[in-house]
Figure 1 (tube, rainbow, N blue to C red):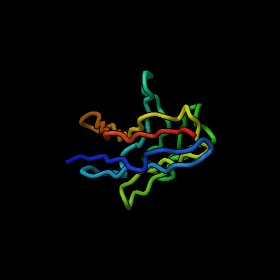
Figure 2 (cartoon, rainbow, N blue to C red; figure 1 turned 45 degrees about the vertical axis):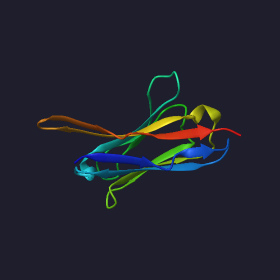
Figure 3 (cartoon, rainbow, N blue to C red; figure 1 turned 30 degrees about the vertical axis):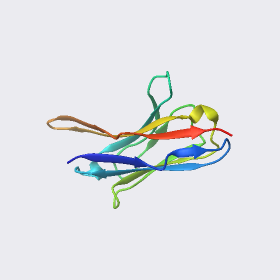
Length: 121
């Protein structure tokens, strides 16, 4: 059974840090591109960060988080992380983990249930 389980969300102070984790199961994690998305109240879902599956995989960040957030993965633990530093109130959102792979039989696209991040003083 495919599972993506996010954790690490909660309350953070402006200027502070949080670290999100996403534990994967039920598929070959190392072959999947991993992404973090977020959706604030009344806003569209937006890409936060991405890391492709290839060794030394390249990364991509949304403009609003560049220089503040860092995505990483541990294929031995089937886990992807999002280190969130210099938090801002506008980072408040539900954060979702996504796994994507384009295979011979089509696209495999999996989502977690999300973890809430609230940044306030």
